[in-house]
Image (tube, rainbow, N blue to C red; front, side, top):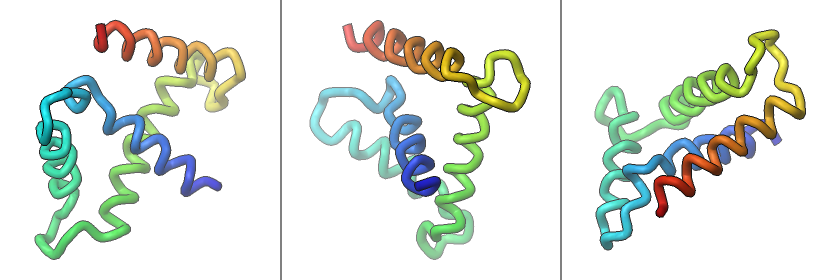
Length: 94
């Protein structure tokens, strides 16, 4: 369950405005380049390298969600965070 959640967060994080281009191939190339950049030793992206990225991004996301900084995300904080993300996404799409 935790792994699925982390992967879902990673997918959402990768879907940044610069990756939502509609030109064929542009998005794919940017995503591929970001993924390959995770490879630190040139032997392909290992699970450990991938998880390092996910954990780093998940920590940033969690810190952003935790509006009052108490180390816990309330229902209100969670909804506020995702409402803001949704609004940001739709502003960019238009």
